[in-house]
Length: 323
Image (cartoon, rainbow, N blue to C red; front, side, top):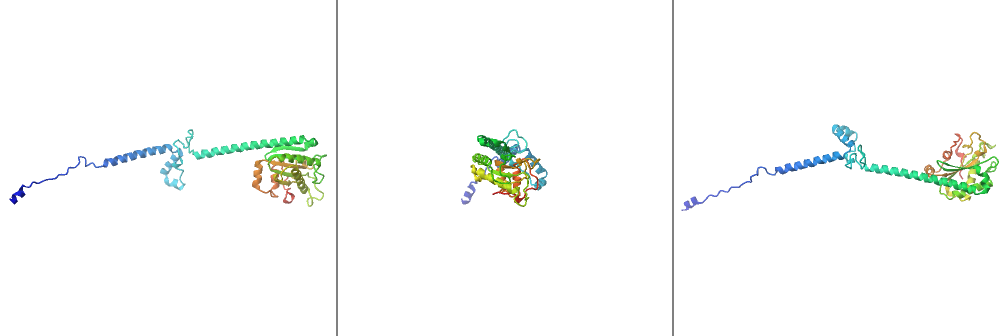
């Protein structure tokens, strides 16, 4: 019986069924991902080519044609310099060649605006100096005692500012002969001018000039150099007495006969004069850059204020006074 039961036991066979497409797996997903990545790379390349300037494209081409040469020369600016999709870069649709950076345009605009402001400031300053010139003329005209001396007062605008010159005439000298003692009418002229100049903040320079008639003692003693310096200082004191601020005067020079007004006649009385310069901003900036005027450079500063140039070699450090 036992043997028969073993023979009658059923045999069960288990079979595992596999999917019908099991042989493909997930390979198609990888292929599709590669295709999408390639398309993204293609469109990215097209966008970069569209936004890169002609110069950068040439640089990239040169790199691939001869990379070693480009590397040795330091390379170029690269496509990173272009930050705009407009051909040529920047924001100007009319620009198609070369790089046009927003920073460059902004810097150029600022430069133009700064120059325009400087030009406007120069015009405004020229107008102020012209108004100052007219006020001085009016002040002198309103004083009947000074009317006979108007021909001895010369006002003009130079590149450095307003120039006021008071010159001698044969019968009407500004100072006693060979002296720095101011005549009464000269004192009144200077004080009238000082009163008007007190209304401004411009810096002032003064220079005294003599004719070429030498002292009998020659250059070793008291000479035209000392005399012109003393006369310039005497004039400064009268301007201050008229109201001019002492701080406005930044330079007092004695130039003797080194800068003649009438070169053809060195002893002409008009060569004896006091020159006052009301400096404009450009001249003040130049003066500030040079600092205190040294004895060797003082004549050059003064000569820049006059159209007439002095004879060479006549100025020396001991000839200039400022006190």
